[in-house]
Image (cartoon, rainbow, N blue to C red):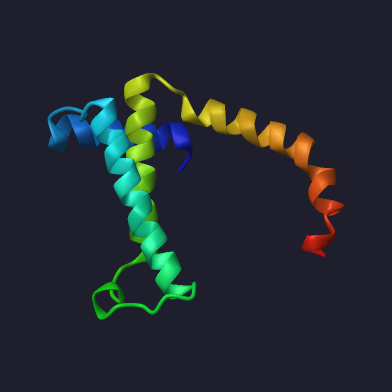
Length: 108
């Protein structure tokens, strides 16, 4: 699935099940909350913090999908073609970062 299609799927879901988009500030707060849930899993599962029993059943993939859903909502409601923006960003990163990363002694 490409990003443009994902934006359409989210928009269809919002119109069918969600009634309307939350406003941009609410979605920004929601995004922050979802990123926090991802951070909690990463910190406890892969970092130095111990994982609480209540966190052991959390699915990292589902939490990342929640982040993606809200990002797609924000793109839709602000008129951003996220596929176009992503492609442009990847092209820029490829040109800018190729030599930098290959020459980074810390990555060898």
